[in-house]
Length: 292
Image (cartoon, rainbow, N blue to C red; front, side, top):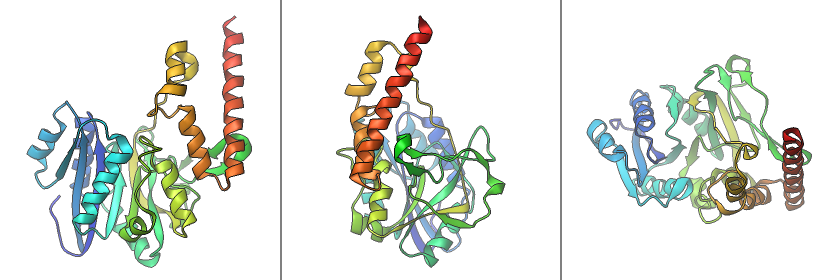
């Protein structure tokens, strides 16, 4: 993506061994409108062995590739990219995943809102790859008695009638973050959340007085998350996911910390985690009885 002039934006993309997805994302970004924008892309290649870095260098020589050793994972890799973007003078940082395809005007539309809402973190309207009209992972609400964050039911994109709306939580698939927010809040917590740093980042910013907003016309198509069911695994694999794998979304320590730092209050966080444990136990018993 060649640079233009105007507002400076750094796009940060952590990647690992998904060369074709990464190239597809960069191909999508190469079509983004750059009127009055100076955009630079920072790809943090965390130890890929599939030729990702060389493929980027060949097809997109203007993209800055930062090498990791394979131990950064999502959060530390994103933080490294944020540091590079700020060092390059970016006024805004876009953090996104490499399984994203963006609308050509998504940055422009996010910035239009950011200019009228100077203390706001903006999220794009996430849509599913496999059902491209369907809103995905936008606007979860906290429900203690349901185990924490509850994602809204699927809704078609054309049913979203507000140009922008406030939310309690923003998923990290595509965020526009003013540099001032990083200055005030710091980067994502890669010590406690090596793989899911967005779990605590937007709630922390909200507590510091930053609005969390979604722009309904900043379209970003993403691949739905696929998490294997614990109840379909062997006992050893399931126990490893629950207790020993810090990078698993099912890790109990991770889920407790996520509830602890992102809940409206600490008490609600603890209660929600207890509800989550109870639901997991009940589901496990149901599976056991069904197998008999």
